[in-house]
Length: 355
Image (cartoon, rainbow, N blue to C red; front, side, top):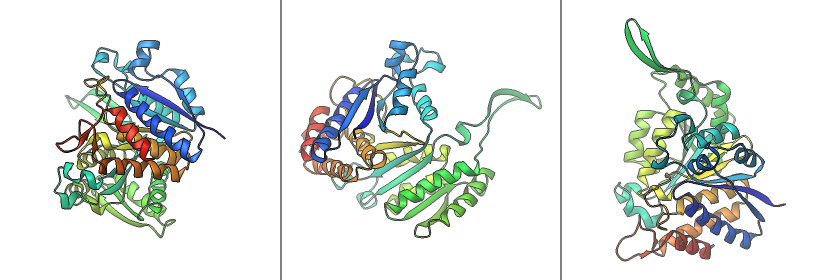
């Protein structure tokens, strides 16, 4: 039976990088007989220009019916004047809500060929291979808030952080299941010495852990975890945490790799999941053919692994990316003297040939 994939190029470099990922998926399809079918939909600024809204109902409906969604990027200076409720970035929030995307998986793996690109010393960067599992639809970002009120004669604002037991159970189960497929270690990150929500998070995580005795669990305060990511990131396997802490830690971890263009992500949904690189739409280089497509290509590999369960094909793409880098193929963001500088499409072709 055919797999239905919705492709949402979005804005800026979105079309270039999603075209590159589809080229590699087609190579995997040819080799492994996957029968992948693609439907293209609009979201973000391009959708606003066409329909007056960043996330048309037609796009959301198609995503709900798909086996997976491959997403490019949204946003750009062009839409800075738009009403905040209609900004391109609202497309992502709408997809999270509409598809029930409750968890973000952010792998950070430093390939041997890219060790020298990390801001860390080579001995610290070598061997880094971790996944951050971030809760995506709860916590302070989705709690009640007040922009301005007078309290005891002074103006204040507030945001409410809250988590329920089912929300914590769902995300920590995913973390333990992910660790089972990797090296069997989970680090749960909180601020239990200060926050009541973190104490509930820790109690609930301990209860869920009882069902995964083969997985090692440790707890770290978020400030300590941030420090450990900077001084010894290779110690981590799977990190699980809430929305706010996950937002900050995943961006910190992204820098460890040396190039944001290399990093994929998966937003896991109750039914359909969404896969995208972590970088933005980069409108300043759109249309120039110099964007790094590797993060999107690796996101496509995650799509095969997590949504379609085509593990062999996913492995083949990841190995092909590794080999392409080892062969010295570099887009402009990674190019140095002695390497082969290639365009976005040429990088995709090199990976496709390796597949």
